[in-house]
Amino acid sequence: MQLYKHFTANNIQLEPFPFRRELSMESYLIENESILGLDNDIFSEVEIIEAELTLKEGRKSKDTDGRIDILASYAQEYLAIVELKIGQLQETHLSQLEDYLQSKNNLLAQFSNLIEENLREQPK
Image 1 (cartoon, one colour):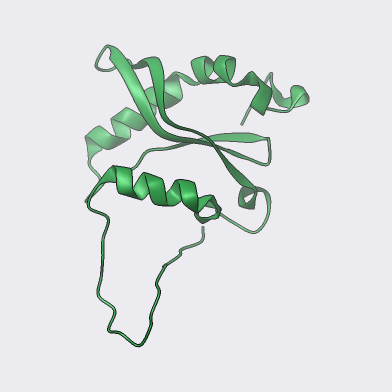
Image 2: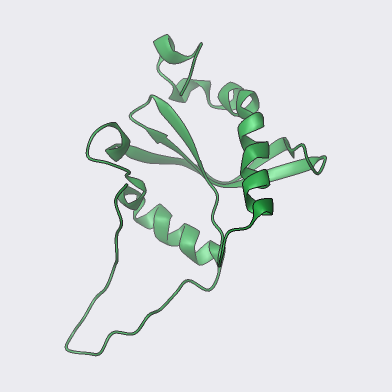
């Protein structure tokens, strides 16, 4: 995993400037998708497919639709769900992500053209 910091300095004192909203964080990642690279190999070829993607019946634990913050692909082999949160992660956030992962067949049906044909039977 790679960690990044972004800053610009013109002879001024730098102060922490955290994201105040998930939407701001999402916008930054969309404009700088390479930040989502995880290594220097397969997971460096990242492409954002969708943002704010509605997933029908995506929250099975709540019996509602879900909204994926960012759907990305890595080297046309892997699909990734990026769920953004401000502050400390909690158990409910993990349950939200697990719900989305359980709906992977819906995602694969909707975005089947993103996975190489020989990998469609068992996508990563």
